[in-house]
Every structure is written in structure tokens, then in C-alpha cells.
Image (cartoon, rainbow, N blue to C red; front, side, top):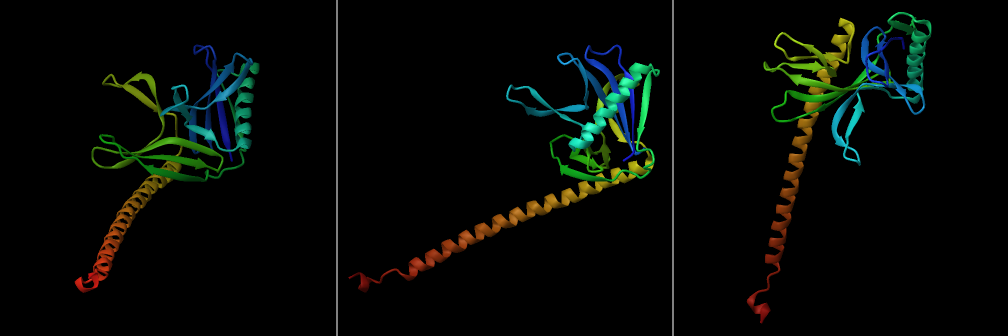
Length: 245
């Protein structure tokens, strides 16, 4: 799979944040906010993928964070992280300006293959109707994608985003996508697959609910039938007065 990595230094960030990387997959899908961190204990750099805070807590009661974007195979994880760190080292060693870009597998011009997983999400007073994830080329996963419903009742896809320091005309914080399709063609193909997946998940959910209702009805009917049969059986074996004597 073709991909490119762009790295830049961070000079006014936290003590351990040394750089940022942006990954573009097959000229079709971009992921930003990949952090290049320094481990002070080992005095070496490592890659940290963008993450989001979940509602879960660990054994110490602290919030659990999950990666928004992550390699799903050990082989690709090593390849990707090594390439990011090598690109950052090239930037530092050769003073290649404010940023440095490296291209991998340039001859591969195919659009990335992907699969979609959508889970319906129902919460009162929320416009979020489903949570989705995509798997690219069977080696990369993008999580925390949502399917939302507008005030007009139209469904749309929202990619993971972060709160920037910018404000809009009304003084509200501006949110920027962490990852997003780069080309219109891939955008349409990806978003259609997610929305189609949402429709299918809804139908499956309805079928499951109807199936459970029918299953419960069958159980109740069987129980009633057994009670009736036992009642008839008891009445059938009731001894007569002569037999009782």
C-alpha cells in the first residue's frame, strides 16, 4: 500500500512532545495529530497515536483512553512507526526546513480497500445514532466515527475531531478532523459504505428485537399450554365418589 509521512518539529509544546506526523494512505485518506514523544527514562523517541477518552475506568479509577487510529498487525505497526521515527531523525539531522516528507510504495496507485463496522447507538437527546469503525487494507483501523442525525432528519458521517484554539464568528470553539478522506471519490465511497452499514445494522437490530418478542410469546404460549394440559390431566384423574368410598 502506498502512503506518505510528513513530520514537523514542535518547539513550543510540552517537554516530552518533540514532533507531529501526518499520514496519507494511498492519496485517499489522511490521519493527523500523530505525536512523536520522548521517553525521559529511556531517552528515546516513540510514536503515540491520537486517542479519545472513553467512559471506562481502569483498576485505579482513572479514565481509559483508546487509539482513534492504530495499526492492527505487529508487522505494519513496526514498519509504520520505524518510518515515522526515521523521517523525524532525517528532519533533525539534515535541518530539512520546517517539515520533511517521505513516500512509501510510490508505484502503488490503487485506492485503499476497506471494510466498515457500524453499531447502532441510542441515547436520549443525542443526535448520535451509531458508532462506526473502518479497517483499511486489513492492517489499519480507524475508530470513534459517528453517524449523526441533523435537525432535518438527514443522516451524516462525522470523523474523529479535536477542539482547536480557534473560534468561529459566534465565539464558539472550532473543531478540526483528526482524520478524513482526501479525495471526493474516496469520500463518497467511504461515507456511502458507512451509511449503508448503518441502515443494515438498524434492520438487523429490528429483526433481533422482533425475534426476541416472538420467542418470549412462544415461551408464554408453551407455559400456558402446559398449565392447561396439567389441569385437564388432573381433572381426568379425579376419583369419583364411589371410588373414594
